[in-house]
Image 1 (spheres, rainbow, N blue to C red):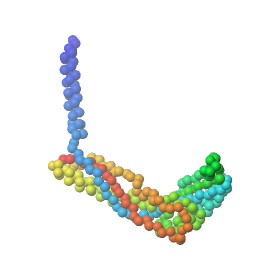
Image 2: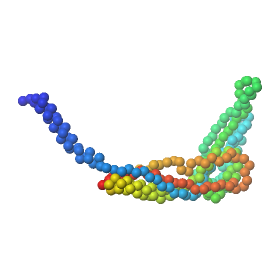
Image 3: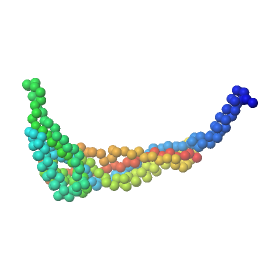
Length: 238
């Protein structure tokens, strides 16, 4: 016995209907009312370390001469920093380059003339004893550093100190969620999800100066760093 086309169509429609009925509770769960709020909070903290980006640029008629001069100056700089209490792990080479130097003479209109070579060797130096930062800056120049690319003030335990801001950010989000829910005639239920917006802007570089003659104990002002926590929280609405 064979089924007619109408019977087949009716049977297929019934299967589709019962299938939809079976998954509807899940869809109902997915359609629960929620409220999502973003909030932030911050704390002001004192830096406890600093990272200095400094180095030596040497020039000479040949690359060999420039490199030898630079190597001697950099060795003197690094040895002096170690003698001042900076450990090996807190001194890291950040850049090394050798470039030809050319001179342009607009009068003769000829090609650039090679006049020598330049060697640049830079290091990142982490100063953990912040009260000695001014002395270290002065020492580096005295030891031969003639480039200061910049400096970062650092909060080494920032993650722990930031926890207070995180707790306050959650509290701010919850307060606003309750306000919105009440205004809409609902109540805040269970938390569905929490996410934190992680930013790399904190403790960014602070440009300083090119090295020149500097008095002893260079004056520095670390100020304070702002640690901010930004969260987004979703609650169910009852």
